[in-house]
Length: 135
Image 1 (tube, rainbow, N blue to C red):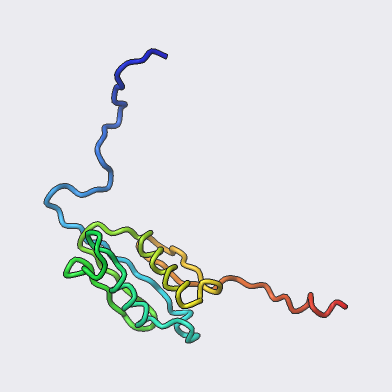
Image 2 (tube, helix red, strand yellow; image 1 turned 60 degrees about the horizontal axis):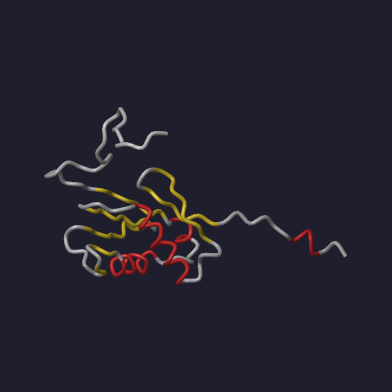
C-alpha cells in the first residue's frame, strides 16, 4: 500500500442526523411503567422527581430550565420532552439507576418498544416449584 493523503469516498461527509444551524430540535420520550405501577411496586411520582434532579444539561444537574420538561402523565406513564439534543440511552441509563436505587433492578428491565418509547417489564421467571419436591 502506498502512503499518501486520504481521499474522500463517495457518499459525502458531514454529520448525519444533526439539525442544521438555526433549526429547533424537539425530542419526545415516553417511559411506560403501567405494569409495575398497577402492582404497586413502582412509584412514578418519585421517578419523575428523580429525573428532574438527575438529568444533566450543559454538564450540570438540576439545570433543566425550559429546555427539558419531565411530566407524569398518570397511569404510570412519564413523558420527557427535550428542546435540545437528548439521548434516549441516557434516559435508559437513568431509569436503570433509579431501579437499582429502589432495589427493583432484579425484577424489572427497561425495554425499548418503539423509537422514543421505553417500557418497564418484569423478567420472565419460570416457576421452579416442581424442582424442590423431587426428593
